[in-house]
Image 1 (tube, one colour):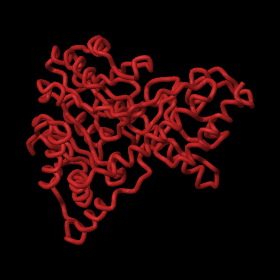
Image 2 (cartoon, helix red, strand yellow; image 1 turned 45 degrees about the vertical axis):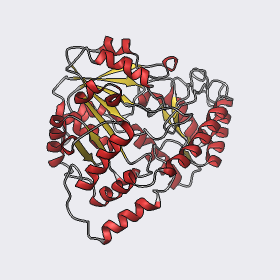
Image 3 (cartoon, rainbow, N blue to C red; image 1 turned 135 degrees about the horizontal axis):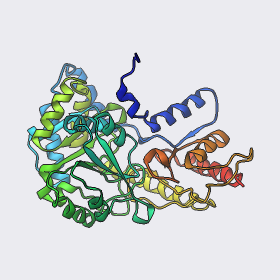
Image 4 (cartoon, rainbow, N blue to C red; image 1 turned 135 degrees about the vertical axis):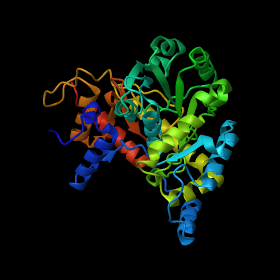
Length: 400
């Protein structure tokens, strides 16, 4: 009898986590590795947020707190949704989890029955399919090419809907591509969803505030209010507020789904940290001006990386309007040989070659469901990005 549960055979470890662990292990061995695989800002958590956490500790706010969030945090989340998205929620429609991933996990565990289908546009964040599989659902992966800016079309969506479809997952701005659905694109998707009243939608808006070029962010529940009672709008403090380690995500959605998610969470983590909740109140209510400063820095880095990657023969890189990743095509590299004679047959082969030969860690596109591409994060300093692009160019020039 195996010690491990059968359900573990359905899933893979998080590839982004695995690559970061490998790269950092190489660094610990003294090797010169530039890590562009991490999905987190390189800026510190703003001082006002850190001070709010310290104040909470000094005031003794270190005890158990309600799993769905303190009253102050629920109010801050409600106000955020109304202020930023023009969506109205009650406290019974709000949930707080241990990061955005936990919100998604709770939602799938609370709603999926065996073989319920979840439509996931690819490229996707690496954990979506595996969370669905853990909950005994069936991921329906829809390939969305660079020609369509990595976004699902209404016709693709309708074609993949069946009588077993339970959820559609939408991530905008996207990890890994930075693609954003426009207001009009969401309206067209809404027209399809209105035809199918039994389908729920999870919108992952975690990169909502990291957008460039005067792009206007829209989320589905505000674009089509008729769908609001079928939408779980997920967000968090990790990306815009540089709080990845604080582990706090939140969502607004139908009371029945929120109640089910709370039931799941009551028998697992119970809640995130009381100190993280206090800090999140300040994040949502406090000064937001630093986000503009961070975005200007991200935009400059994006432009730099896109320009330099497009100078490399065999690589083609779109300019993403949001998040802090690029997702270049390496189709022109596939089939070439390394100096040792190994053929680059896939984007994973290329990423392994970059890490082994030049010490650059990125994530291969297959991990996100669409090849031949790879993801690089530009959430690091300009000096590192310039050197990483130089090394990538050297590696690609070594391929024959």
